[in-house]
Length: 126
Image (cartoon, rainbow, N blue to C red; front, side, top):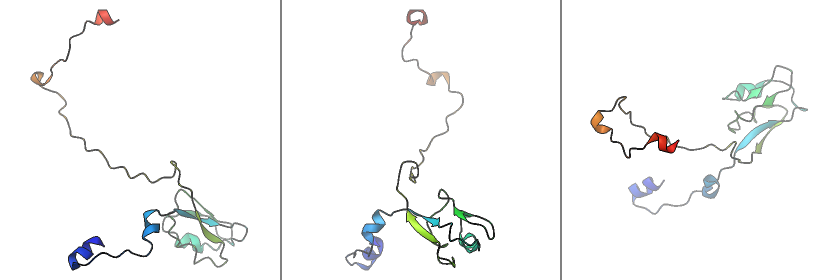
């Protein structure tokens, strides 16, 4: 958005929901198993296969796989699926760690590259 404002030479305006976008709350689907009729419509709608169950049997959501996309809620004919917030902990935090570039070192260094820092007497230190 800032680049677009810069290209148009105008002052950037805040978007609705900027505050919420800065701190999104993760949600996962929860199925009220007492009301689930096992129609499998939620399973068909889930893009990441986070819902398991069989036809005419209760279904359940695997919270580790659920992305919170909300696509399973609307197809449910009994409205037994709701999105519940999940507390962020170190166990479920999506760590954004960039990799550290590592250079490939030659397997054998030339003798001129190996310089001892200090000669030690092994018998003295044992």
